[in-house]
Length: 375
Image 1 (cartoon, rainbow, N blue to C red):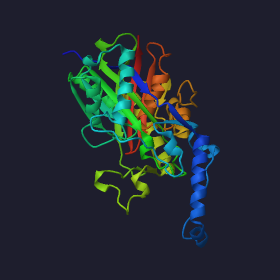
Image 2: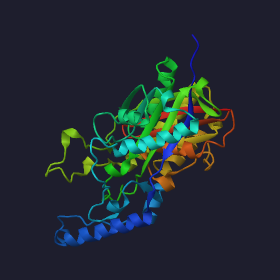
Image 3: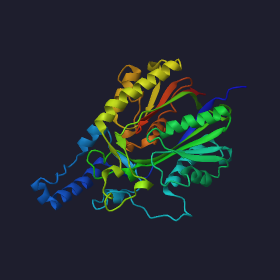
């Protein structure tokens, strides 16, 4: 029995048209801080409430490398009275917001591949935050695209896309599907605490899609999936406790842990060595010299983390060409980040070049996808 080789035929991207710069974000946040400190001046003087500290564009860029982020709902986020995304509730007969942006990214991928939706067998919606528990977002995306097959959701936080790629590749190898769409719609602005100085600048919104297929379906240049590896290690250092079992009550409505929270220094210290070692070990298993990797498309989480991981893998400080970033203009887009980097920075590679798509995030979770350019 011949072995079926899975490949990445193409990728797709949807970018929200609205952008929030650091300067706009800081102006909004500092207005909130000034109002909070004025409203609580007596308690602050008495020592029962801690005064909030203002932020700055310099602080944000130094801490993360982020200069701007795309969002689905700009005005409410920047309103000091709201500081959260808002859009009109849709009826059950209308496509949901998360599915809508997922469909746009998927259609971009299909058009770039010259593929008809009828040729796709499955849809995986792999993302950090689903708009609802059920029906599955993937099935709604499948319906909107007109795909006859199967679909399901999967969530491994920032590693959802790479876990989805391996799952899709396994389906192709096993003959259960020949063409699988891995769609990652990430409305990260919805789970972000925009009133938290240490994290309010981190995330942006976006949607990506990856078309994983049997190699004989590929037309023109494509990427052979040489090998993948997934890893999870439980940690509370990145957490979001919101869910249907703990819906907001008057007692919990303002609870910070119902939104994104993290222990940033611990995450940096623990995740960087774990991911770097994982990449090097998997490269050795595949017979690849990691220092010969032409390009690294890393999860766009933090400029410092990416710089150190790339250095440990390549053995030297990585150039922008070797490890491109989209973090400065997109922010952290969770599972979609490494796919955006791949989408925007892969066409120039030559046949035979080896590259790595890598993710890491809450869980902890980490995923590696080694690829080789073909054609």
